[in-house]
Image (cartoon, rainbow, N blue to C red; front, top):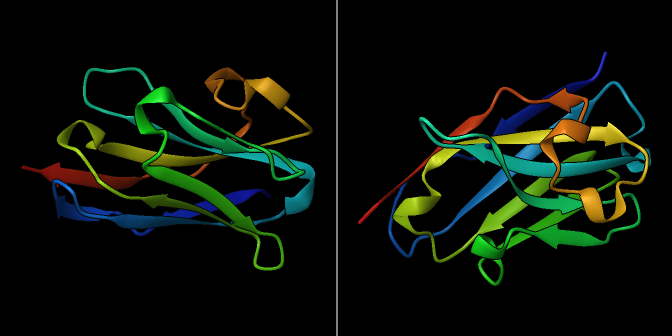
Length: 125
């Protein structure tokens, strides 16, 4: 059984930082593409950042230069470092994984098979 468990969400002021973690189990972590998605009330879930099995990354334009995705294969953990947070970053953040190499499609929600429960990020001004 594939399990993804997010942690690290919380409430911060504009300009602050948070680091999200996603602990994976039940599959070969290094053989998957992984990503972070977010969903605000009344909005569709959108791709924020993705990383493939070889370490190549892709970011949404709205977070480039502020967010960094990384992974620790030994710990089977995915991270999202979020700096210079803005109120518009407020959302439920989800970790996702799917087998294989997504290449340029790392931010495509429909291509991911497994999802975590989400962790809330709230940014106030």
